[in-house]
Amino acid sequence: MTNSTILIADDDRAIRTVLSQALGRMGHDVRTTGNAATLWRWVSDGEGDLIITDVVMPDENGLDLIPRIKKMRPELRIIVMSAQNTLLTAVKATERGAFEYLPKPFDLRELISVVERALTAPSIAVNGDAEHAEEQLPLIGRSPAMQEIYRVLARLMGTDLTVMITGESGTGKELVARALHDYGKRRSGPFVAINMAAIPRELIESELFGHEKGSFTGATARGVGRFEQAQGGTLFLDEIGDMPLEAQTRLLRVLQQGEYTAVGGRTPIRADVRIIAATHRDLRQLIRQGLFREDLFYRLNVVPIRLPPLRERAEDIPSLVRHFFALAHAEGLPLKSLDATAMDRLKSHRWAGNVRELENLVRRLAALYAQELIGLDAVEAELAEAAPAPAMNEAPANEGLGGAAERHLRDYFAAHKGGLPPAGLYDRVLREVERPLILLTLGATRGNQLKAAHLLGLNRNTLRKKIRELDIDVARNLK
Image (cartoon, rainbow, N blue to C red; front, top):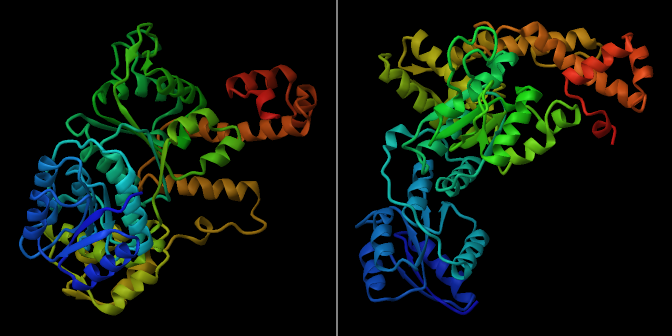
């Protein structure tokens, strides 16, 4: 890498000094300024091989300067730094042509690495400029964990790459999926979401791919599936770990071939959609249990995004609390706030339900307490009231299969927010237990179906039928 001229614009003298010294030691010619006007003059005069700029400067916003720079000198790479560490800042920087976005405070070694990449990487094509309302930010938080999420999302906005979002329940997986759509190149198309855990297993294929009239009992007219509804936009497959194996096979074919057929149909339909999947389950564990296809996992897991639980980003809790109080105020409730002790208590809480649990608590505080400044006693009372039963949190050592099943079902019912889960629950639970039971028994008998049937207390023909129904590949699962 040859020595280059680097232009730095930041109104913080200390940052200019640190960067000037660090990059100067690398042999670069460094020029610094505290305002946008000087930076623009240098660019207009043809100076500089790389720009490092702050966003907020005394005379102009650095983000507003980027389009003018790119129009005049499209080859000039720009690194944006900002203490306004929101998703919108990262997205705007990327959309307007920045090579990279770094939140402040930054790691000097990381910045030097970015500088080296910017000076050696080929030019990157830039999508058009788009404005988005700051008050409608989908994600809140300026913690390091969220900053990394913002940077990844900003890089993905201009692509159609398939994304797999993982994280505990309540971490905001659908918000991330919506952000990828609303700030991406498919924003003018539809955003269609389907929750695999909320659809009866026998209807999932019809829900996804549609069906032709007469294709099954009750199909009195042609049905439009979610893939067709999402044409030109984004299809969000929530709780993908709950998708039945038959539907997994069909989804894999769509991802491989880019087309599908409706249930009962013969004409292939081109799938012009971006796929985003999400789950709170461990898909690798489901693969080992034979409940999820390994080849489908790798097709979906092109770009993995892990959302941190709230306990890993406790510094974001004050911002989230203010945001949720503001939402409650916009809905007609008096504007509230928390005193310091109450806020500290929330920051120390474990938050099993993550951001969703915090939002519910804040809304209760806004609705049920008259005082404008809410204290520790009110917060403690609401946390105690919302605490789950111990059986839902941890398994006793002597719990047994029945207790484990009860805990699983309690969580399943609770996930539907007080409503009832979809029909077909009995068959669904039996299938979840039956498949790993048969797989483990076949493993113990090294694939001997006669011995496995004897251990299970089943007729051999019954076992063969169940192997077919559950789509168990005996040879593959015994490798």
